[in-house]
Length: 130
Image (cartoon, rainbow, N blue to C red; front, top):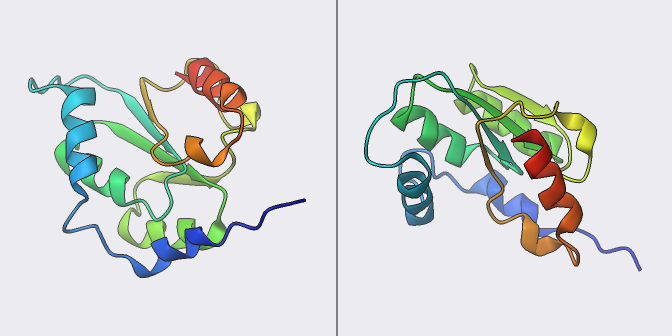
């Protein structure tokens, strides 16, 4: 039986660009630390939805480069309105070919991995890209 993803539409109606989720703040603090390191890094958000976490990260770390990847074109279209200078592309965490090996310095997969019965392939891809 093939399941149908219906919950992703929620992100089309939400607007957490100006008031980010507390989870975003928590993860950012742990991933980037308290000291601001001004080095060039490429940061990815796989399953970026409408780009709200990327928006938050860009505000906190304007010196970094960002890329967002999601399976839904409608979510990427919304994200592009708020993130015109961020590379956004359609793709799945299960497709190893969406990025080259060791291209990202930090990679986020927030809320995506629980949708899979088996996490090994998506985690293997994250390790390959990062």
